[in-house]
Image (tube, rainbow, N blue to C red; front, side):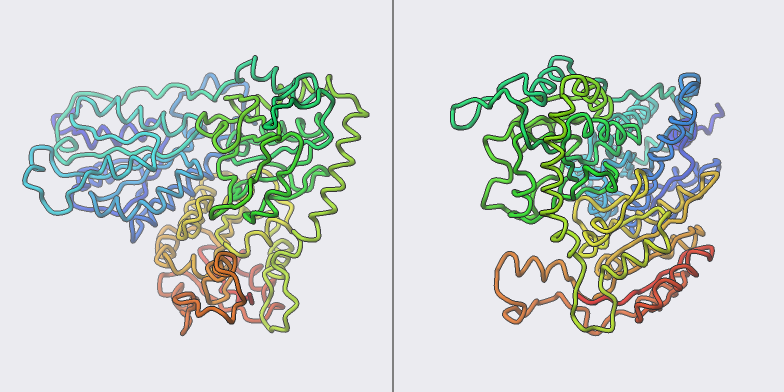
Length: 593
């Protein structure tokens, strides 16, 4: 080390050793030592014009890189143990650097989104020197407390000697299942302090394990009719094979990798269960073209309760499976037998009782249960369950496929027409979705493959557009980049249109499709659900964009190409041309409600 080697240099060297190639952020004065160290390193700095844009880009980057890490693991599993723990190919962590209290506060919206989507993210922020804070300088605040509720771990590096261990710990905590963001405050004096220390080795990152064998055995007993379950009435469930078993897959399945999705298929086939995606699913947790796939559970109280009405429910990797507002009726009957499988202990039995509770890697647990139940359940028993699956599919198919369709005479495209055209033109692309009211048209009409789709899980707008830029940057690092399409509503786009500056500045090859009905349609729909009545009964204050924003001109002002698409017949050609071009394109597609 030279005499001028500082905490900032050590921090950047640690990131480089752990396989980090990019740091996202928006700089400020307290970050200048880190910025200088990045400039002297091989790391690239991805500039966001707003801190929340930087956080969203880093989260989308990390979520996409997680798929790349899974792909590398599957194709080269034999020699993974020989790799350095910091090998870039197996480390999907994203890093974003923010600026003291207001900068961190700006980033909290998408930090919340990253926490709900489980993005393996290390968030840092510069802070005032430790010996100066008693004067309460401008931009002061309790950064650790501010970030704590949206992170797995939030702390501050108070001494340069603690820096190597804390950076290593931050990366490990972010990557260890259940994955999620962490926060470290980096005081100016610590970053400028000289040090002789070096980065610590990262080591291997474990999965959540195979689960408690006793609970796995209990789950197998419940699913095969070999065990009785106490009921709310005081009686016990019949020991006979339950007729209706439903598997509710959550995003914890997809985050465990393609092998876990395949294990969910094996489990469904072994049990004869019907399969649904949890409310607000944001990844592809089960192939929707499979015969036993029925639907996603919508955030509608009555529909959700109907679909969750089963003798036995298996919740695998779930976290957001509840309605958007308070529900009046129970979504799950008190007499339903509930089996929970998750790598996150907090989610096990959170909203429903757990008659069997398995904390472990969802893929490993479902695989073991599939093997066990394949032997226990007879072909005749499976066939009886599959008959029930077909009955439920027929019951819900018409209702679910109506979502996004509208027979109103309108020259603009319906959401269903838009989705169908995108599937025809961009069926193999990687999609980042925050289309909000067009989401269920997409999810009910499109047979996505595993690791092809990520979405805004938490419901806060402004995540999808930055995340799509991060995804495009992540794809650019692969040997065979996929086309990336960001699918957002006009309300979502208008949260952070300056995101397109970052896309253009860093030459992200991205096509953004804006589903533009020129209003906050989700709020109008929720008004009718919450307050009742017809549309004519409400004024919908603050929910219309009148006059509308010129989205194509806005995109071009930030360096992207913009195009207004008014005719449904123009959607396909415009999308194909945009995807053939390099760099960022924005298609503003007019749709009707």
